[in-house]
Amino acid sequence: MRVPLAVVGLNESDIENVVSVLRSGKLTMGDKVAEFEIAMADYLNVDHFIMVNSGSSANLLIFESLLRPLNGAPRLENGDGVLVPAIAWPTSIWPIIQLGLVPIFVDVDRDTFGLDLDSASDAIAKSKIPVKAIFPIHPLGYAIDQDKLSSFAHLNSLILVSDVCESLGSWNRGLHAGMSGIAASFSFYFSHHITTMEGGGIATNDSEMADDFRSMRSHGWSRDRLIPMNNDIELSAPESKFQFVTTGYNVRPTEIQAAIGLSQIKHLDEFIVKRKNLVARVSNSIKNTPLTLVVDKKITKNLNSENHSWMMIPICVNADVISKEKVQDFLEDNGVETRPVLTGNFLDQPVMKKLSGYVSDVSLDNANWVAKNCFLIGAHHDYTEQQINHLTQVLSMTRSIK
Ligand SMILES: Cc1ncc(COP(=O)(O)O)c(C=O)c1O
Image (tube, rainbow, N blue to C red; front, side, top):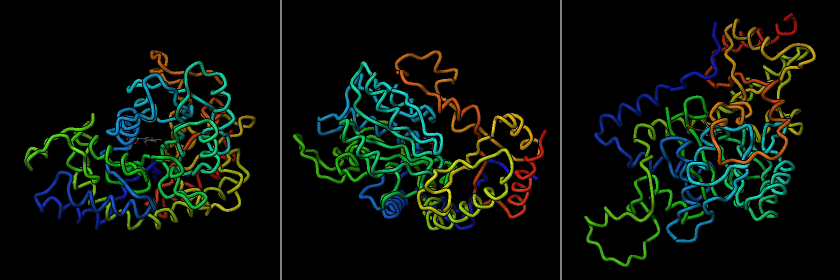
């Protein structure tokens, strides 16, 4: 029996939707994308959702729009510092470096793996460059406290933008994760809460920024903008379709992706309930073992908390009893797939040894501790009952590994 980190997760109605798009003859971005964007905006309770081809592209457009908005008033400039967590995903960091900004790595909290605001204060105090933005990752389904994030940003005059690629369906203080900032990225890669195979998007309540995302995902053209443009040049209808007003990329999604998303999103709440039930069973199975479920102390007693939608299950090992490697080998030998927590401490990745253009001035003790002692197993909503039984049995057997 195998329990992979994720399963494909497509149901019959997803497949029917794809077939009907294929038969329709309209495959590139169109009505289905628009419909999916409305469904996502409704779900997140935000004004705008702009779908793109991946969560990584969503991160790229967020920073592009902060640097080169159409309104000529950039919120960030070349060389500005952006606070990021050391436990990060590569494409949370690359757009910052690629667009001439400077990631400033800060430590994470051991109980949640989220960016630690004390460490962020320390990084600001030590920084030799202007620190202008903070880009927290809401990790693995956990919504970081939005009030704390927004007051910290306010107090330090920082732009708050968030990477919510791992935490669709996670709420905090009445807001969806990421929505206390000005924009937040999402991913629909197949292991996430809903899938469009590959796919992602950006949520924002800022209408100008939303229009910039609409231009920037499509070469920089004006045709998808909602706010009427103040044009100096009168263009005839066919010409106006080829008017380019911002820098841009081609990171559009297809109708096929949106059609899958439309049928998946109807099941999102049900998927999250299944994930929470799985976590409760995993939590029971690791009692009296050297393993601990990583969960914010505030929600330990209520694993049903709306602050957590459980993208994966983070587990730490009591290093006084056994090493993480021994536990992972045991699980893998018994068919349970495991992986590092995101990428571990991202600064330990080989590529970072070769790169310059980032700052790491503060202690990253917690990130190093997490990388050394913790790992992830899957939390997928489509595991079979046999897979769940197998998973919990194997986990409970870790109490007797020698
Ligand atoms: C925190 C984080 N940001 C960004 C991404 C990138 O999303 P995508 O794979 O859709 O490009 C991921 C991927 O899982 C992620 O975990």
